[in-house]
Image (cartoon, rainbow, N blue to C red):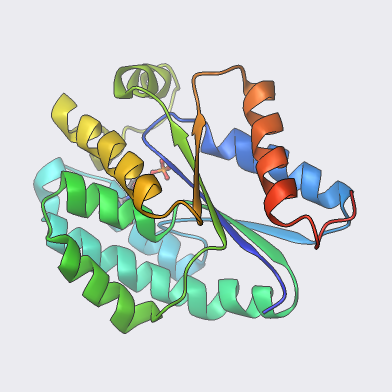
Length: 212
Ligand code: TMP
């Protein structure tokens, strides 16, 4: 595979979408073709699953059922879009990926982490991002940002405060355990500074592949 797979992770309101746009712009200046996608979603089938899993009352699905839906959507997205694009040499940037399941359904939702690992291995084998940017923000600040936006509140934005603290701690634990793949960026900094840090991280990690 000659493209690179970069994922963005973080709690609610961490600013992933803005930072994906900034990195896309940076990579296009390096003459890299990019494709942005999101999870759950990214294909018509997976977007339909996104509506099923993100809308409605919090208790509609158990965390185990959410995990199964997330991996169904992920399997289709990886098979039909992500892998073919990487093989064409495209750099794929995804707003969330498998770490979201580990954190939301595992650390915060209570599904044992080894079950999630087993399912990951069944569905995707060893497939993993080349780089994961974790945008870290105190949950109060993230939820304040989300609530100030005029948009439908998702099932995942209706949990008690402890849930979001577990999400944050889960991401920090993943970063600690996977230092070669993950980089934590302070999402409380001004937007421009965050973008600079992310572009620098990408430039350092893939310096042989980018024409700076
Ligand atoms: P987003 O628009 O912030 O990406 O919202 C998607 C929501 O779905 C977010 O609250 C996190 C949740 N989610 C999971 O719980 N598990 C997953 O595997 C993924 C990809 C997302």
